[in-house]
Length: 282
Image (cartoon, rainbow, N blue to C red; front, side, top):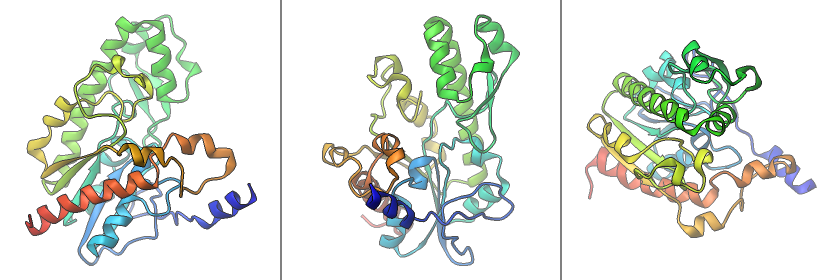
């Protein structure tokens, strides 16, 4: 246990800000006065508990600055309204956008914290009318709230899912419109990118990214350069937390995350695509 604590202290995230953004991103802070690539995404892009997350592996392999805009538990809202991040991404040679879930964004039914998008703030009068038998003051996190709504009424919950999907697509189009067309979308998950009904998945509401289907991603393909699907191999998943740095108190959290080998595989897939897009190599 002592060794785990020492190792966790050695893993420094060097949090930093860019421009007028209020979000602390993973550092060290990268220079923007030379060619660079930008990476936007959630916990996986940030690389929590990972010494060398996939943006850093891409940077080393490509020998080009990679700016990590990963945000722990972040959703689209953490970026789409951040003018500094959007401007930096727009000026990048290429931006990799991790596909994030539809649960962590404000919509017609509820609002989330503008930066910590997993935090539930308030239910709209519309959602309160649909779920008149639910006390929304009991919830602090979106996933907990959604689980309770589904448990209360699976039929009514489908209305919520449809709203989240529509909001996700609209917000993604907004963000991609701000960044421009030099974007690669990244599906980095142990879930398959398909159109299977979310209720049929063994993970159900624990799936990540939540409620996203292949058809939804297909609607965005004309707006980006490519879509990279990085599903970890069984061997990478079996490696578990090997090589990760975390305190004993957060061991359970670490087991739920994609590990070191998963990041290595994702970076390899990204590097191949980035080389094709930037240098038109086969």
